[in-house]
Length: 279
Image (cartoon, rainbow, N blue to C red):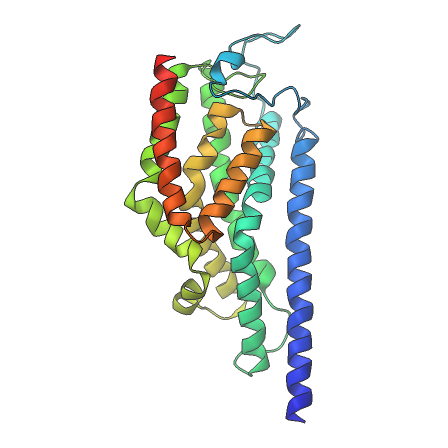
């Protein structure tokens, strides 16, 4: 009887793992599909993808038949930009958050199988929802900053990238310094040790899952926000930059020497920022 129960438990764990993994993959693919089709901005992603170490030079050039003047930001347009940022963050960050979410789902099922939690739907969606809320908060700040920079003429309304060498250099240097800072590595350690986080912050139920998701999502934002800010340099809808940044975020969190990679990225960004000012 005990063997049958153990076999049933293992079967449920395997099934849940594939369901959660499938949901995360679908969420990532749908997010990328939305971005690649223009994210509701009415612009071609291909036209906004610049291959350049100094993209502010390209952003300064007017596109044929288009004005360089900033457009009018209606409330509806702000919502579209906010959704663009949010969906882009979901597509970029979900792969790096997946190990934590999968571990949470497994730990919850094990606790239910051992009788330590009530049986029912595993509140993995609530846990993942905490991440989504934190990414939404970051997206709100990013959209507001985009509005301010575009209004001041420092970000191109057409290319969605910095038009100023000074702004580009400042963002690159800030990103480099943050990559080397203690705060960055406090957040990165939390992201690289999901089991330790769960053991210290475990709370039962859907509300507990949401709170844990918010807490770990805050560490996730704290770890990666400055890399996301680099999109203002390369172009917010520059698919090449989006893909490279998503890969770097993933490697920082799951690669064996991710902490050293983070420091190496910081050194490169500092050199890149200094070069941007003098070329």
